[in-house]
Image 1 (cartoon, rainbow, N blue to C red):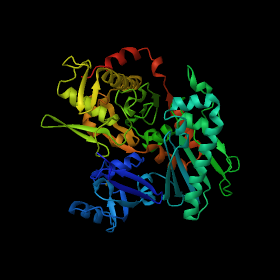
Image 2 (cartoon, helix red, strand yellow):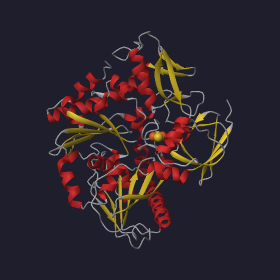
Image 3 (cartoon, protein in one colour):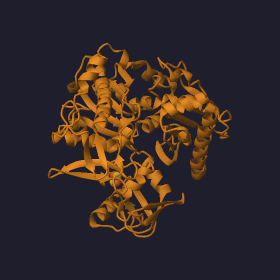
Image 4 (tube, rainbow, N blue to C red):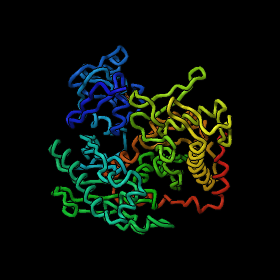
Length: 496
Ligand code: FES
């Protein structure tokens, strides 16, 4: 089916060809845009301004727009399908969606600050008025290092191959540009910049030796806070006296997770809470105000579609969700196109639905004895894919069990499980539970969105002693070193 309408993103000028009837949400999702309420029309944060063309409004969307106080040139992207050429304003769009507006605790300070989430794929910066805690502006960009590979291992390898200086320059220049862009637009000078990210991003930005992260026991001795002046980074922001890349907790648990701990208020809660980030590494945290333990799991990239025979990122052509409709598969394919493969959320759904139907048995075996199961005309789930899922699921579930064991508690004593990151927003929690990935009732699970960014904003208002207190409470655990790891891991390979 040929692409027949064009979406233009203003002011980028980016033109995207899609098929008529494509949900706008699918298109923008590919550009890293988040849909915090999962497209239910509740949060209003997917709003876009229609500059040219037509995006029809139905009664429900009209009434929701009026709830959010939006004029008739606005649309909720999660409600719209594209039937003709349109131009939408992306700067507003980025500002609203990526400017996480979750409430957070702060005490008024003077001046302006910038919080930056240095993601492996996406960079997000927010400008804050430190007196009011208000987010004044936000900007997002692709991490320019992606040309050296999408995952952390390829970034480490590129550094070892002599590209570290180039990668460092790219990231410093890009973040400097982003900060300049929003401060000039708002005509203010930032006095503080906080950066958070995984340990590899921390090391590359800071120019630290990546070698220790490339071989066992993967221990770097440079996990601490890195401070820079504006001149050192060649940013030339004269009023900016403190630029800090926050400390990592462990070699594969970075300051993005430290920020998540702060964002969930875990270090002050009496009851036990859990934080899970299901990205490439699968970082997990459990604790309360007396002790926090965190770990990175060897889940691998299955939830990002890698190592799955027809796995792919959540882009056009990926099956992103599957449900049953009167016993029949109901697939959602991103971009309203012919299904080409399956992404992480679709994989979890496929496993849950097939288990429910008895097409996959408790050991992961295909009940019919065939080598693969058809999900769509050209998309199959193979026996090997199911094994990959089991390995990833077992790594997370075993990691969580070991953390619970370390505290001598069960899931019953965990008050809430917070899911961090954009991926979490697209998970069908019922299916997550059915596959045994999480063993808690759905009502305990909270999709938190970008906890790294929320935490980074909170860091802007705190001094180093606050961070030290959180770090002192927090211990990094090497899961593979736990004597029970193998047994629990094998047990968690089971799917029922
Ligand atoms: S209103 Fe929440 S994602 Fe559209």
